[in-house]
Image (cartoon, rainbow, N blue to C red; front, side):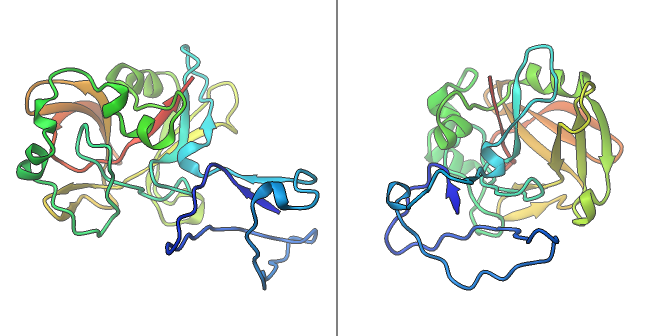
Length: 239
C-alpha cells in the first residue's frame, strides 16, 4: 500500500507516480494491477504503511544555524533530480519544461506582477500557494545561510542519473543533503543554460525590474539580481 499525500484527484486527468519496488532479495518486482480507493476504505490501511512524499514537499534538515529546513526537490517534482516548474518572480502558477509558455515582459505585466514593490507576500509566494502550511520561498539571506553553512560540491553525475548540480551537505550528518539540479532558465519560450547552470528565485525584492536569485554552475555560486519576467526554478523552505 502506498499513500499519496494531499492529492486531489480530478475527473478526466491522468496522474503518474514513480515507484521503485523490490522484493526482499532486491530484485525488481512487476506491478500488474493498481486499484485506487479512498484511504479510509482500505482494510488495514495504516499497517505497514509506505507513505509517498514528493520531493517538492519532503523537508530535509541541512543543519543550519536557523534550523530552517529545505525541500528535497524543486516545486513540481517527485524526484530531486527533476527540474520541476518554472516561474516568473511573483508568479504563483508554474510552467512545465517545454510547455511553450512565453516568459516575457508583456506576460509579466499582463498579470500585474510588475506592480510588486516589496518582498513577496505569502499570497505571491509560489511555494506557499502550492504546498501550503509554513512552506515558502527562501529569502536572499536564507540562500546565503545554506551555502555558507553546508559543505558544497559540484556533482557532474548525481547518483548515476546523468544530472549535474550542486550538493549542500549537512556538516554534522552527511546523510542529510540538498541537491539542486542545473535546470537552466527561460527567456521567452527558449530554455537556456539547460544542464550547465541552475537559477533559483528568492522571495527578496531588488527593484522595479529585478529580484534576487541564487545562480550556480560548475565553477561559481552566488546571489545576483535578474529580470523578474525570466522563468527560474523555485525551491521551498519551512521551519
